[in-house]
Length: 123
Image 1: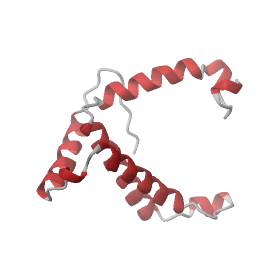
Image 2: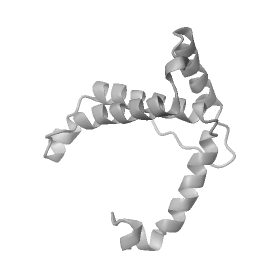
Image 3: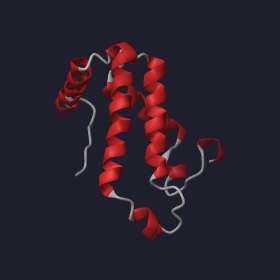
Image 4: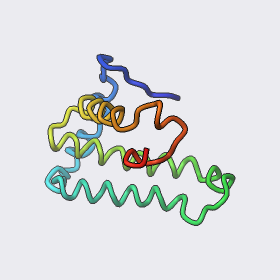
């Protein structure tokens, strides 16, 4: 499944998803714990748990043999905390992503970066 949003396309499914996340949080009275610092820390910790799935894997086969169930669960945790942090700071997800993509387009022009993993400062 591929999820692509083009400028101007509705983010209704994303808003519905955020509503579900907020309901889950609010039903448990957890908003009191969700300041920006704690959400950022939780996001980092969940990202570390995602990375742990790949720890000590060397070959391409080992990397691709990671449990898809565990990968999906850890990725979901990362996404939930990222969305909660965005919501906490009143960020419009579409705007911040499209703004960042535009900045990256300038830093990584196709003619210099296509097929190249170098950082923009080294292009």
